[in-house]
Every structure is written in C-alpha cells, then in structure tokens.
Amino acid sequence: MTAILRLLMLLLLPALSWAESLPLPIGQTQTLPGPYMHVWEDPGGQADFVDVRALPDAAWQAVARRDASFGYSGSTYWLRLDVHNPHNRSLGWVLLIGNPLLDQLDAYGLDGKRIYRAGDQRPFDWRWVEHRQLVLPFDLESGEQQRIWLRMQTDGSANLSASLMTRDAFDHQEQRSLLLQGLFFGALIAMLIYNLSIFCITRDRNYLWYSLFVASFSLYQFIQLGFALQWLWPNALTWQQLSFPLSSALATLFGIHFTYGVLELDKAAKPYRWVANTLKICAWLVLGMALFGPYAPALIGSFVLVVACAIAAFIITLLRWRGGYAAARLFALGWFVLIAASLASILTGTGLLPYSLLTLHAQQIGGLIEMTVFSIALASRIRHVQEAERLAQAKLIDQERRLRTEQSKHLELQTQISENLEQRVQERTATLQDTLQQLSNANMRLAELNRRDGLTGLFNRQTLSEELARACARAERSRQSLAVLMLDLDHFKQVNDRYGHLAGDACLRHAAQRIQQRLRSSDLLARFGGEEFAALLDNTDLTGALDLAEQLREDLAQNPCLYQQQSIALSLSIGLHAGLPSDPGCGEQWLELADRALYRAKASGRNRVVSYEANAFNDA
Image (cartoon, rainbow, N blue to C red):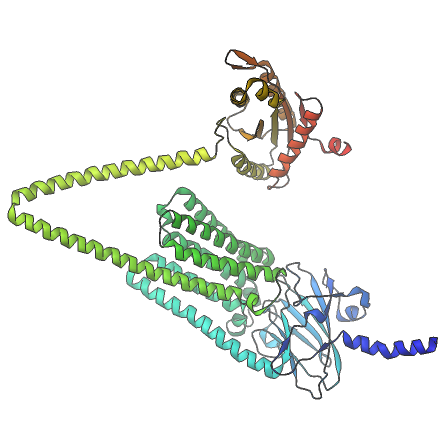
C-alpha cells in the first residue's frame, strides 16, 4: 500500500508543478503574468544568479496580484516565472515590461545562456529589440516548459507592469499604441503651436506660460513613455535619470505661472499670492534636487509637488469662481481631472492601484483633457475680452453721438457738462477707492476674527495648531527649547451651576486676562475648548516652564473673579511638556503629552502643576 502511494505521489508531482506554471496565450489575447510570479527581495542587491537559483522554494513568495509592483523601496527584486506551451506548435512569444523607467532589468532563461540586460540606466543598443519599452522575446516548442528569472533594480517605482503575448499580438498592439501616441503628441504639438501663435499676436504672457507648460509636459510624457531614451539621448544615462523629475518640476513651475496669470491672482487677496509664491519656491527646490540631489528624493518630491499644486490650484480656482470670477469654472474642471489622473498614476507606481491600461495612461489622458479644457478656457477668455471691447466701443459710440447732438444744440452747455462730468468722475473714483479700502479692511478684520475665540478674544484652536506647527519647525531648526502648557479651570461646572453661565463666561474672560498678563509678547495663548486653555512658549526649557506655570496657578488662586458684587474663587490645573523637538511635525504629539500631564494634575487633586516625564508616566 505504501509503495502504491509513493508511486502516485511521483506521478502527481509533475502535474502539481505544471499547475503553477503559466500557459502561454495564443491569438490576439495577452496575459498578465503577475499572479503566476514568485518574488524574493534582496535589500542589499548583492546576490547573483547562482545564489538566487539555489534558494529553496520557501524563500520565495507569491506575487498574488495582477502586476508585480513593490513601490519605491530601492531594493533589488528577483522574480521567478514558470511558463509552458500547451499548444501543438511554437508561435514565438514576447514578455513586455511596460515600465520604461526601470533602471536595470536582467532576464535569465529566455535564450539559452544569453542574459538579457537592459533598462534606462544602460545603453539603449543593449536591448534585443529596438523598442521604447523592455521587450523580452523567447520561443518554446510544443509541450515545453521553461523557467524565466528576472532581476529588477531601480531607484524609482519598482513596478514591472508586465504582459505576455504572442509576437503577432505584440505587433498588432504596437501599431495601435503608436497610432494613439502619435495622436496624443500631435494634439499637444497643435496646442503648443496654436498658443504660441496667439502669444506672438497678442503678447499676452498667459499664452506664453501655457505654451511652456504644454512643451514641458510633452517632454515629461516623452521621457516617461521611453521615447526620449530611444530617439533623443540613447547613451546619455545620467541625463536620462535626472530628466524625468526635472521635466515634471518644469511643467509644474510653468503651470503655477500660468494659473497665477490667468486667474489674475495679482489682483486677488494676499493669501492667494502667498500660496502661489510658496509653490513656486517649492518647484525651484525640486528643480535643484533633480539637478544636484539623489534621484529618489527628487522623484518623490516632484510627485508630491504635482499633487500639491494641482489640489491648491483646484481650491483656488473654486474660490475665485465663488468670488465671481466666471472664467474660473473651466479651469476648476481641468485641475480636477489632473488631480484624479496624477493620483491614479502615483498610486499605481506605489503599488496601491493595480496595473491596467487605464492607470498606465491615466496621466496622459488626464493631461490631454486638462490641456484641452485650458485651451477652451483661453479661447473663451479671448471671446469675453472681445465682447467686452465691443460693448465698450458701442457704448463710446453712443456716448459720442449723444454728445455731438448736445454740442450742436448748446455748445456752452456741453462745456459745462464736460466740467461736471470730470468732477463726478473724480468724486466717484475717490468714492470707489474709499469703498475698496473699506472692503479690504473688513476682509482683514474678518480674517483676524476667524483666528480668535469670540468669548475671550484669545486665539482659537485652529490658530494654535497652525502656530504650533510653525513653532516646532523653528525650534527644531534653531535647536531651541519649546514648551506647551495645557491649563484647565478646576470644578468649572460647579461655577456655572452655582453662579450661572454668564458668571462662568466672566470667569473665563477673567482667567484669560490673568494668564495673558503673565506671558511674554512672543508667547501664544489660545482657548483650547470649554474651560481649557493652551499656551505655547518659544525658547523656554522645562525649568522656565514650571516656574511660569506655578506663577499662573498662584496668580489666579490669589485673584478671584469679581462678578456682580460676588467674589468667585478660581484655581488652575496645569500640565506641561517642554524640551527640544526632534521632529518638525511633532506639534500634535506635544499637545497630547501636555494633556496627559494635565490629566495627572487633575487626578492628583487639582490646583497643581505637573510636567510630562516619560519614565514617570510609563511607570504609572
């Protein structure tokens, strides 16, 4: 019986191995080999083919998804794929790697002992097939099974984006792809020439910025799709590496200039200009990183910059549209499309979205739609300008006719009317300037009120969060101490229950005033919520923070709130955290630590000061 079982196992082993291999497709179909692949990660990138081939099966993990995508880890990945030809003839197949920006790709087992070596950090003429993407041809006889090994190493997105098809299917797909790519770049060139022509005629800089945006976006796509390495610089590998984030940052920079001009942000509120100028600085920083820094940070920085600029432009465009700038609605649509396309492209590169033709070409589709919408918006802008000029001209002609009629009747009256008209224009101009100044002042007051708490006049929680983030960044850069205090009025509910809510409001104002008097002008005090306050102390160590907290506690305890001939005693529980920030984004964490210290102060009997000490709190 045992011998029979062993014989059955021996007979079944080839079938089990066969079941894990990928049957090669025929006809015009193509197969995604990802679910049939196994991967082994080599973080140091030191293993060679002999070492990898000797690995046990337990060291390999199934990819288990439609595409072999591993994000931006920087590791070297070895992939193993078993294929077999179940057909009665050999058709010749192609393993197409759809990511032209892979730095290095080695393939073993395609053609005897030959090793396929390619990638955008190797000369283009190393490739077996002269193609913008990595094309790996191989042949299998009828019934033959073969194992293919791939070694992938890149500083960018480790996304294989592989597909398997016959050579006839590849030729058919390539013809269709080249047709679509030709239409895509043809449309971009048409938009570039059209808008450059308008700039040459009108000298409107918005059309120049848009033309530069289209040109740099076209270059970015030409590089991303592999055409640049094939046709422009097949041996300039260093330039190929930095050109991708560089062209992305250039397109973003020109897009910022275009948006700034076409939305007339120079005439808008100051925050609009501040955001635009900040994004310009970030774009120049990414350009510098692309030229002089490591590739991976520059690439990630360019992606983050694209998403940040698209979101900011979308929000600003919506606000301008809401503010009465009617031409902004088309620009809002264009930026929304670009946001969705950019996010899809970036998430595909990180492996969060599966590879597909839609996600692979999402940025192309989104960019083309966006630029088409922008071109329509610019054309609409020309039409609106022409219509405004026509109306203004018609109005001037009508005014001229009426003035001539009046002049023919009463020349003296016309002179008097002209004098009065000039005076009224001056008066209305002065009135308009005064109104605009009042509106600007009102907007400034409203912005300040939005930062303040209505009851106490202190800064609100949102302002605290913003200022705390800036303070942490400053302290981390300057290596100076920072302190955060959380202050809570003890038994405040009893004050409301005993004296009423109006008295409680008076106590809150009294406490805010007493605390504010003890702080420096550089410190920030905010109402955190209810009866809680928060203080942000720049350049203050633990000793100084404890001393100030004790002063605040004693001062409020010694100065009760006087309300309608009643003396209402108040006390404070204070929790604090002070030290040297190690992370510029540690603001919310420090608030939480100070709040934990406040909880300890309240639990210990209230009316006391407790500082957060990690050892003591962990022991508790």
